[in-house]
Figure 1 (cartoon, rainbow, N blue to C red):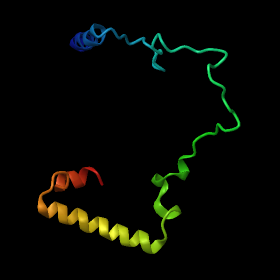
Figure 2 (figure 1 turned 135 degrees about the vertical axis):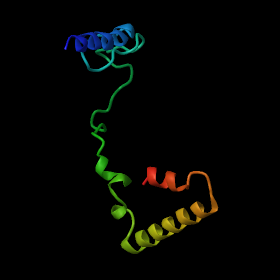
Figure 3 (figure 1 turned 180 degrees about the horizontal axis):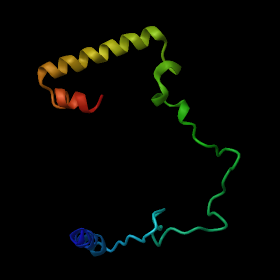
Amino acid sequence: MGLLGIGGAAALGPIEALGESWSDQAGIAPRPPWVRTVDIPTVEVDWDAIYRYDERNTVRRGWSKYLDEETYTRLNAQRGTIIYDHSLAGKAGYSVRDIALYR
């Protein structure tokens, strides 16, 4: 049991050597010295034009907002054919490993 304490102390060494400590608080990193918060911005801000970005209006949500069903089916089949053809041709980025990693 006594050896476990020694191992724990040895594991603490590298953390302390990097300038970090177990008591350091996680959070937002401090800003660089040239970034500062001011009360009066240097440029007029039209707050009526500012709105929160809605991620639901992007393509990551899906293609249903931008394509009809027939076009989506055709493009999806074409994508599969192109990936298969490039894989058979040995093109870089289309190996079985690449396809498995990015699908």
